[in-house]
Image 1: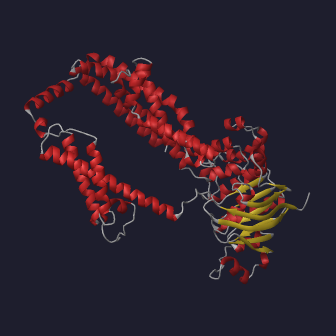
Image 2: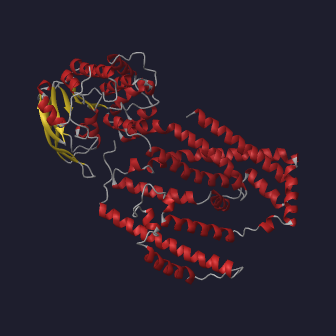
Image 3: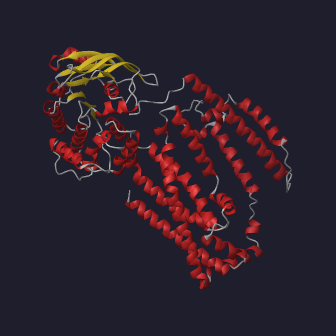
Length: 256
Length: 353
């Protein structure tokens, strides 16, 4: 097993409307890393994450996940790759009107027959696993609540449990705390840290706040206008780099 | 975030299309104005012809003359086509109604109103004539003293109507449910193959929906014989196309988030639809379906008039015999069930919101 779980080479993404979202992006992700991607809105961060698990098609370039180029995979093979990559979103994207437990169980859809999943027949083993992951994110006792009745932070924790249910090698987090208040943001980031350190899941996370980046990231890459402009240690981002990434007018905002 | 947008047409293309649309709008409106002015204002009002002759030359001349006028006025501020396509600079501070093209449009609407009155033969004299008022009095007296002797029979017919509407709704439901997915643009525009299916489904839904249930009832009463079954089939067909349309619009309005989340777990497309789409649409679907049942009960009475069975058929029979007291009772029964269904369906729809 090589040390790199993900190798991105010369990745290009041009949307059908002509937007050139990613320009010749190359980087590696090491096993067990907490990699944070920073950059302005529209710099291509979300696109990059979605190219990794093929929610978006790439235009050209390679993405090697465990040594296999995922960009050309189709059908079952592609879904198999997706099932090994968990993802959480800014808007949590839980299934409304379903219970917390069902939402977590849905993380395992790839390993469930279509018939069984349409009938909602989840095995006892899966249920036990789901409860275990809910315990990890401290939501024991909320299993029977409707997911859309929880607070934002709780919903994001359900989403983390759902992603864990996939037993992922990588967890993609697309602005996981952008719709949360500062205190809740830290709590959610701490759960991501826990997943990263205790379960050994590689985390790739888009973030806006540099204070969070310095606290949680083991490594940082920065995108600007679809290009990779910085790669390195989060503590090495000084004033000058900050202005290069975010523009001359930018002033750093901290959350504590 | 809908990033996979449909490719935008180049700006030049868009302008050219708008230009031709504007010309066509102008030509059509002027041809219409010329034709209506000639047929109604000249022939009916000035010449007072009771029956005007019609030849295909008239619309052709109108089209020619309309094109000339449209071309002459196209570059002026009187061009409605350019106005509606946003090609005339409009001062925000001024009301749109003060623009010359808007005034012209208003004049055309007034012309249409005058033409409409003459075509519908609106006549106050006949409305208020002595013989007419006498007839109205006779029928209203009979209607207001309903004959309760046929109440039992009417009630059974009404129940038949309600069940017929219910079965029509229930049978149409699974078909509409499936077709709804195929008629939803956001699910079908991913590949050329699916987009073709989408267009075909939309085409057939539009056609079957644009044919009134009344017409379908006539067709089916010949096919399967006069009776509730024919009426049920007619309602069913119309319900499938209407519900599928409403369902598909609901699918087009859902948020992409849960779909993305389900795709990210590696789920099969069928699973993505079942868990990413369906939970977002169940309640609106339920609401539409109940509303459809309500509509079907109303339509079932109308369809009965052409032999679709139920209370409508009864109404037609007594009306044919000019038994106005019995008709009065039937009207009473129909009004009550329509009112009751309307009330019940609005209450149910409110409580599941």
